[in-house]
Amino acid sequence: MASPLFAYHIDPETLWECSDDPATLTAWLDRAAAQPVPGNPAVARQHHTMIGVAARILRRLDLAQRHLCTALRLAEEHGPAASEVLARSRLAHVLQWQGRYAEAMAEFDRCLVDGSRTPELGTHFHFIFQHAGQCYYDAGEWAAARHCFATALRMRGGGAEPGDPQLWAWEATDAVLTARAVQQQLNRLLTAIYQAAAERGGAAVTGEHGLPEGGELLLELRTLLLSGPVLLPVVHAIHPQTPDLDAVLDELAAAGWLSRQGRAVLATPRCVAMLRAVVAVVDETAAELWPAPEIALSFVDLAVGGAVGTSEGAAFDAWVGARSARTAPARLVDGLCALRYHRVDTQTAAAGAEGLSPAEATALSSEDPLRQRMETQTDRMAARPYRLLAREQRSALVAALAALPV
Image (cartoon, rainbow, N blue to C red):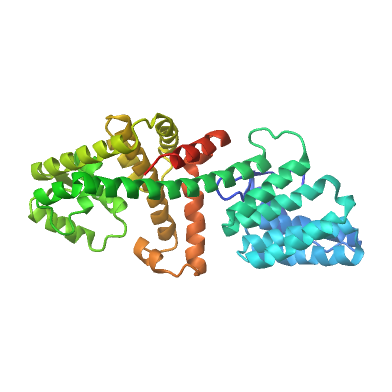
């Protein structure tokens, strides 16, 4: 569809087309849909195809499906073979956007088989792989999506310039896979550092200061509380799964650990003394485990710096703003925490977009389509810090984290 009427841009996160001039395209679509169908089968197929593609771009998916089904039937009855493959792929694209991934992939699989036997497709064949990749991408099957996008690029041949939609799709998928790999490393590294710190004196510190049951949430707020008052939305963003959080904060305030300042909480001198002692133990533990973390730190700082302003929640930016410059191992711990809170923000946002609290979202079965849709959306948003990195930097970041001992 080379006409300026069909000009679009690609959403960098969903990879869906967005019309550059939806009002003009809508007016054309309404006129075209009201016109008589041409009598010539080839012209009629083109008529239905253009209406179907326009309707899809405008998210009028039921209309798009009707017209593209008709276009496919005409292609099947009157050919040529290449037109049938392309018509089927266009219909599969609509099924994909409707969330009917299994049906869409069955159609794309048929297109890939038929297309391999249809040399008349010529340079158009790589588009079948590209659209199949987009279906896998929408379904959250990231490795399969990246494979299809890589195949499309390879089949097209030649280099791809920055901003090329096919290269963009590959980079977006690789960023998602990087985010997932980083998350695995964050879980490994932060779990290890906190367990080691507890064994090296952290647990004794909290016991000596008399930290009450439920007061552990102060430890996760340590960097924020040591920098000054913490807004309540930030506290809730750090602890999205804590039930009755406001009641817990009231109890900690009554016990002398926090003070209320409007819509913020402030650490009392008692709390500050405990948190400083805990942070000292964490810093010492990090220095023992990671005495020379400069390579990992440089890549973590790169990701964190590029992620500022990309989070959908309050935790990440607040944590980054509260970080203090200490030793390299200590800064690495803070950077790892920042990246973890970026994902926590995205999980909360994805649940909220479905009208659920984080706790309600977590309670869903892993097989629930709603849970799967939220996880796919979380992965996309969590990839934002890594889309800004070059592919070599993404690989180096994961490798540097994986090399850190625990």
